[in-house]
Image (cartoon, rainbow, N blue to C red; front, side, top):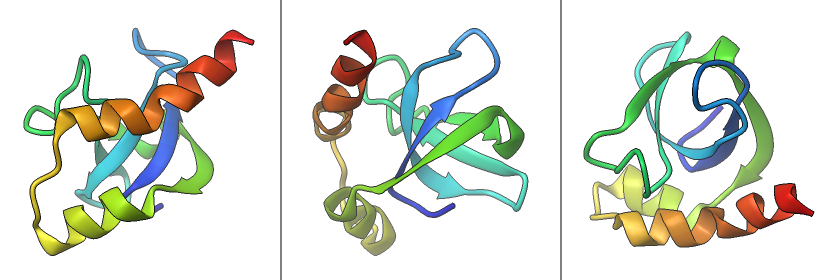
Length: 89
């Protein structure tokens, strides 16, 4: 797992929701945001057992997060839109 990776929740009330990893707290916990319900400033802490990796890394957002540059919720929401649309088909 790495910052900027797209993950899907597989447990909890947010089951099936897509997020981007914004911070790695430890080997067992990461912070995730979707730019909609969970903003970048109020990122959700998830146990890594409760998320499924997609293997996709959003390089532009990952680079901004790693450099400490500001990332807007609208950027995250827009980047995840294709994942949400894909699950409806």
